Each structure stands twice: as structure tokens, then as C-alpha cells.
Length: 397
Image 1 (cartoon, rainbow, N blue to C red):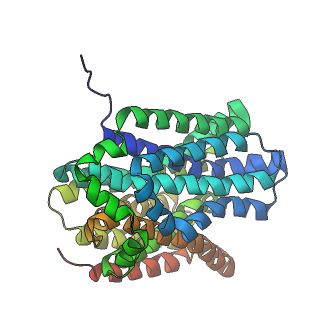
Image 2: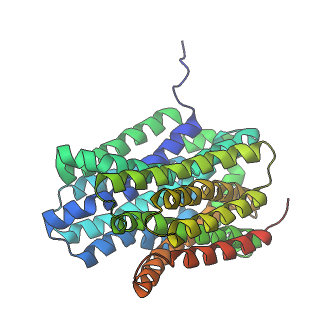
């Protein structure tokens, strides 16, 4: 007798994304330990943080072309295998050099998972459930980040930092095995459309040309960059902001993790709202407005207004969480053809990485110039204004 699987195939794909995102989020809570254990300098720590984004910034769209030819399920499996191997080897490192190279490898593994998953979800779920599933998928990054911020310090207390690396390597391996057991192979799933798929996969540069000559992929990519630049900068610097306000240690970590986890609520809510008939562009305008107002409250008020400032952060992250999920839905719809979805998402991921790569240093420069974080809202509000302008140019359909 065939037993019903515990998790649906699309949910397994989403959990694979969360497992990959844990590798991105595992480093911030480990940096103090790594600097003490391996003598890593502040500059080397900065490169460890940015190398993952550099990989996405330079290769995401090219890598997305390869995923269609390789197969979506195979691409996710390869990405998880790279993450497993790199994290397992990273736990054996005795200096910064090997960690830097392995961090770059993790960036490529993460991209293979994150670029392939939305297209695979689209193939696995019926059209009437697509917005709900993509809404859940949009939460994979904040959920992985929050879990890493919450669990990392505790795992390192018991197992030290190599144990944290090896634990996540084991998790990636388990998720790869679960994906094999739960999701049909690419050939079996696409048998009904094998000929068109082969024709499309044989013309990768034509797909790239189709993607970049259409307006939709550019609009969703630039909009995602405006979101990603400010979200990572604000969440990444929250521990420093709290330290300046007299909140440090586990309390600062827990508050930061809660703010990141709050982003999941917005992602899930956007999927449900679109499923019930809300227009994606309206959700994006509301989210950008909330992010602007939230950061104004969070950074313009005096340090003594701790509760109000934190509520501003929660508004920024929670309502702003509607943006990534909504953009994933729009990327699927605004791709110029059936076989350019992965390429469109790759282009969007590349601009998201570019935004993250630029946003945090820009916020840090403004804070250094102003002698504090009180003018951070000017950077985030400018990004929100540009994002809202881009949304207004999207097709209203």
C-alpha cells in the first residue's frame, strides 16, 4: 500500500532553499568565534561575508542558463552537494585562506538551489496554487537567516564552530536525500514536453537574449535590488545599533533574529493576498511605503525610545517581506517565455546580490560620516522611492 508522503514535493523544494539559506546565515553569529580561534582579521571577515554575494553578482544569470540544460532537480541536488562538501571541509580549516575559497564555493551551491527552485515549484504545483507556493518560497532566505542567528550560538556553545559547520553539512545532505525521494526526476516529470524542453535547452544564449530584451525582467530585477540592498543592511547592522543603545549579547541576537523571522510573515501573507485577488503592484507599493516609514521611526527617534524604534524595525521587515514573494510571482509571469523563467529569476538574483553588495557599505559610510545611525533612513527611503517608481512602470495586468 502506497503511503501518502509526509511533505508535498513543492514544500520539500522550499525546505531545500531554507537549508541552503542557513549556510548564508551561518557566518554572522560565528564571526567573533572565528576571529578568536583562527586569528581572522576584520578585513578577512568582511570578505567572508561578501564573497557569497560576489558570486551571485557576477554569475547568477549565466548559472541560470546552465540549470535548464542540467535539469532543475539535478541543479538543486548539485547545489546541496556543493554546500555539503564545502561546509564539511570548512569545519576542518585552520586559517582564513581555505575558508575564503570554500565560502565562494558555498555561494555557487546556494545559487544553484535558489535559481532552480522557483521554476521547479512552478512545474510541481497547479496554477491555482502557484501564488501560495511562491509566497512560501519567498520566505526561504529570512527563515534561514533567522534560524542561523537563533541556533548558531547555541550549537557553537556545545560543538564549537566546526560543529556548526558540520551540522549544516549534514542537514544539506539529508535534504538532498529527501529531495531524491520526494520529487520526480527531471526526465520523468518533463516526459510529456520533452521535445520542446530539449529545443529550448539547446539555445541558452537565445534565452538570455529574449530575457534581456524584454522589459519585465529588468523591472523585477531592479526592484529586487532596491529591496535587498536595504533589508540586508538594516538587519545586518542591527546588533551594532542595539549595542550603541546599550543592548548587547544574546538579547541583541534574539531581537535581530525575531526581526528577520518577521519577514517570513510578509512573504506568506503576500502569497495569500495575491491568491485572493490582490494586485501585486499594490502590495509592492504598500510594502515600500512601510519600509520607508519603518526605518524613519527606527533610526530618527532618540535612543531612549527603544520600543518604538524596534516596532519600526518590525514594520520594515514584516510588511517589507511582501516584496520578495511578490517579485518571485511577477518574475514567473513577466518572463518573456515558458523557458526563460529560470533566466529571469537568475537576472533578478544577480541584481539582488548587487544590491546587497552595495547597500551595506553605503549604510555604513553614511553612519560613519554622520557619527551614528540616525541618518540611515535617508538611504533606505531613497531606495524605497526608486523601488516604488519601478513598480509603477510594471504592466498592470
